[in-house]
Length: 168
Image 1 (tube, rainbow, N blue to C red):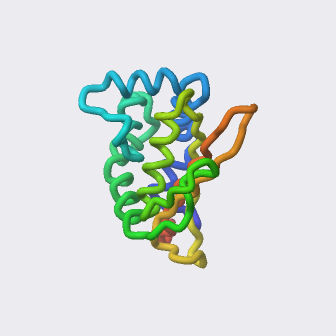
Image 2 (spheres, rainbow, N blue to C red; image 1 turned 120 degrees about the horizontal axis):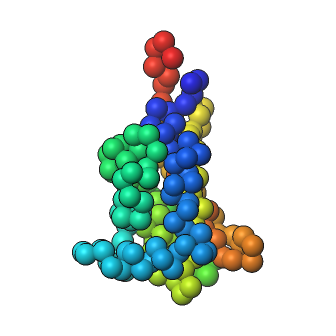
């Protein structure tokens, strides 16, 4: 696997990317918002990145071991991002600067699900290289763009570099 992260390998799988992104297209977002609003105890106004995926994607639709690994992986990413200061504004239309990278991820996701109409999201997963700055920390890339004349958030989770296991 070279410099491939063990966990990131699951999340870079095109089957995983598709299973998540299918919920966030312009066409799917209204149904996703409705499903979250109807879910007991879920609050769109206070939602956090990572809370909604298990609600929107049934367990049997997660490829491989991704469902089993999700909570631990997501919490590790949130912990890493919450310790990193953020200097970027939320979006071109919102100059607020969330305090941490985790706060930025949460605010970007809330913006998409709470906008009228909801903003489509395209998720991606990358892995840092050993030579990258802070290779052992997670990162997040928030890019606001337009796709097919629709506002779009490209949300890229950047996983930390992991030393290859011996014998890999």
